[in-house]
Length: 463
Image (cartoon, helix red, strand yellow):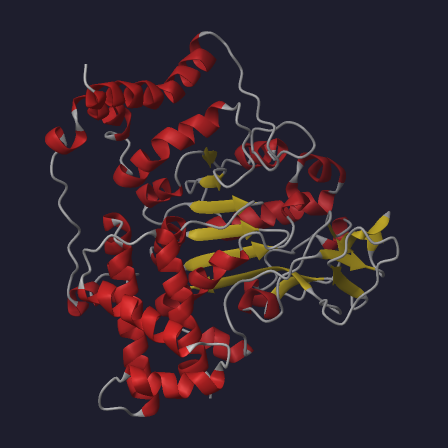
């Protein structure tokens, strides 16, 4: 047996390993241990099992996503995606998936206490701006839709036992018209546990639905024996939750996923009421809409079955997002994927007129779906660069785009840029744009995105 056959057998065994875990759990009664924080199956104090039980007792369906966030696309926007306590940045695929879910009218809850995913929110904000426009951003005079400050929230005027355990009693209504906070203050308020805050410079922060008192700040030196606000730390009345509705899609951000863990859920009725309000608002009270908790971004232990399930079948789910194809995918590794897998029809990029005839979608979201399904990051680079060129020509009234003119302007805006590195990066972008079928890694695409975004911020967005 040659090395190719041996490799196929190894892949086959590894692909079926997660299935072996599942069979062992169901047939032989081996119970899984869910020890990761914020898991809806974790019965310890740091789990969300009581939150899940309450959701199900009220007629909703609560499920977890273990392998790939792309499975949310099966619901065509008729689901609520919950990202609770992520420990790392979202992948580009995940950002595309969330944005497309919202383009179809789906709702999203993101609870990220210390801004672990702040870097990926930059790309997420850019896509939301193209998808929904910037009218609300202009109205509130903010830079983006969502970001977190980092640090631990201390509140000297409203807390339980310690200033690091603030009690939120200030509910300003926000863009949810008070739906999230209804009845919470009368039940003792919303208790937080080593929370952070939303950035007041983002839309969900500026239009916050829940706020600290004015004597609060975000302490970055959490080990200090005598903490106090510094000049570089956020201080004052700070938002801890915000909500917005855009084109039928609803987005909620919270700066403390711990507000819903079992320990807090059992001891504070206000947290229970806030959690119920949250679910009702995101689903618009429709019990047929499932609540899907994305657990692939949690700190899943290496010994757990769900880690291997996500590790080996996550890519398969991303490629297929089809419940009928995914179970037979491991078999295709034995006989050869390229030779026997039917040719998948590439998504058709429709004309602008055709897309605008389809309710709830835009030309941008249609192309984004195409690029995500293709997995071709070169097309993403080309799309962003074309958008930059059009923006520069319109902003500066150029008849033609000239990269030398761009350098002459940007070098005064950002003195840290080096001429050689600038033109080398531009040359790489133009090389990729001229050949959209080129293989580009995700890391390179992200670096080029931030380069293009920096130029746009300096030369287009500024007045």
